[in-house]
Image (cartoon, rainbow, N blue to C red; front, side, top):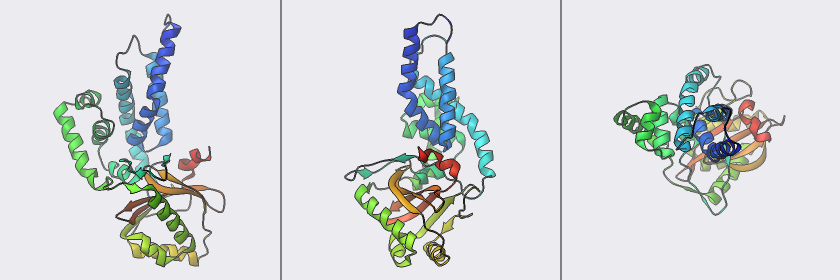
Length: 293
C-alpha cells in the first residue's frame, strides 16, 4: 500500500479481503473449473486490492468485479489448453461434506460445470454472478462492460442452455451414501447384475486422466457399454482401487480411492430418479494433488 497509510487502515484492508476470500475463490473456481487457477486469480486480486488508492466504499462489489475480469482474461488461455487436453476434461474435484440426516442439494454440480463449459465466457459470468452469487443485474452490467438489457439476455441464454443439467431433486444423504458404497462394491467386483440395478439406461462415464494417468479416452455412453467395461476390467484382472472415504464432490455424492500405486482418484455420482445417471472420475494427478493435504 502507498506510504503514509496508517497501520489501522492496513489492518482493515486485510480484514476486508479475508472476509471476502472464500467467496472470491468460489467465483473464480466456478468460472474456470480449476482450483489452482482460482487461487492464482484470488492472489492477483489481493495484489490489486493492496495497491488500490483511497477508501473503497463497497469492498464486495470492488473485489467481485476484479476477480470476474481476471477470470475472463484467464479463460482465453484456458480454452486453448482445453482444446489440446488429452481425453475428457473434468473440473478439479472440490470436496465438501454433508451430515447423514441432511439433503444434498448443491445447485452447482460437476454436471452443471460441464454444461457451463459450452457457454461463452460472458454468458457464464452473467449466469454465475446473477443466478448463483446474487449480484444485482445492474452491477453485473458494469462488471462486464455491457448494457443491463444485454446482460439480461446473456443470463437468459445461459439459463436455457444449462437448465437440463441443474438438479431436479435433492438427494437424501443416507440414500446417496448407500448407493455410493453399493456402486463402489459392484464396480470393484465387476458385479454386472448389481450394476444393472444401480445405473440408468443412458448412463455416462467421464474419466479425466489428462494423459498423465490411465483413463478412458472417450466418454462411455449407455448401460450396455458401461457393463461391458466393468466386466472387462474384472476379466483382465485390472487391480481395483481401494476405497479411502466417501465425500461430496461438487455437490454430488462420491468417494476418494487409491489405486495399486497409491495414486488418488475421485469418483462423483450424479443420481437422478434413484439411478446413477453419470459417473465422473478424476485421475489426473495434477487435479488430485490437493487431496493429499
